[in-house]
Structures are given as structure tokens and as C-alpha cells.
Image (cartoon, rainbow, N blue to C red; front, side, top):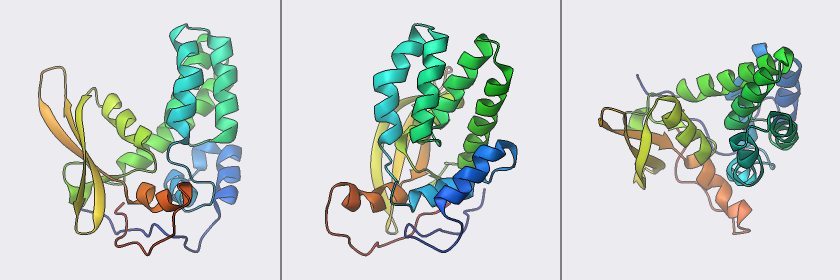
Length: 207
């Protein structure tokens, strides 16, 4: 897959995150999930750590216990705070399906699938030049899991001024692969999250 045109990690003109989010909630099937994800990454609300921290501490135990009603309630509460968490939508879809709540299941599955398509459309992950663009490390691990692979190692590398997570994975047959994810957007947010002085970025994130 050819590399896509790079996108800036800084704020740009275009629809605001809040407007895109409202439109997506009103009509999930018609949403532009790539525009939505990138708008979030350029917004003051952006926190690439938010999804994993909240999900692991509150939702995962309920899903493991198959307490579907409590899990769905908790998932919807988490999504009220951060609607772009792919894993939470997929968990919610499974719980709603088991509870016979078809409308909720369809909505969550539609959003989850749209977010996954957005990540996959940003590259093929076979090299830094065609790396997937992510807005959270959770997107990296979810994409690997959906490909029936397991992460064996992770390394942060820099190529031509861009930062990449390189995941070494294996599948059931033992085949070893390296999958690349562009993490420029995450690193652009670190100074704000850590209350450090903002510096001019050296590069732009590839899509």
C-alpha cells in the first residue's frame, strides 16, 4: 500500500471535534471516522492514555465475569466520556447482543467497525513509510488482536523525524511479523499532558 499524504499534528482548519462527534452519534453509519479521530487528536480534550486506563480498571472485570447488564451500563458511561474507544464499543456490542438489545448492539458494532476501518485505511503497517496512524496505543494492540496475532515485543523508533511503535508479533503458526504504527500525534500531546513547554514539532504524522 502506498504511503498516504502526511497530516499535521497541530490544529488545522476544518470541522471541530465536537461537531463531528455530534454528527457521528446522530448517524453512526454515515460518520467520517478518520476525520473524527484526527479532530480529537488535535483538540484540547485529547488524551491518548484515557481509554486504556479507564477500561482496564472498571470494564474488564465485568466482561470477564459475564455480568452483561453491568458491563453495558459501564461501557456506555465510559463512552459518554470518550466515544472513540474501539474496544469499549466492541465489548458493548457483545454485551448488548447477549442481552437481546439489538438496537444498541447494532450501534456499537457500527461504530466499532467504522473506527477499525479508519485505522486500517491509514496504511498497512508493513514499514514506517506505510505505518498505521493511531491516536492511542490501545488502537495498536486492538488491531494486532483482530489480526489473530500476539505482541511479543514493542520498540519506539524514529525515522526521518517521525516516531513509530514497532510491534513484533506472532500468529498461531509461529510466524513472526513486525507491524509499524505512527505515533507522532501521541508525542505531540505529551508536553501539554505533562505541563511541559510546547516545542515546534520536527515532523508530521503519516496517515
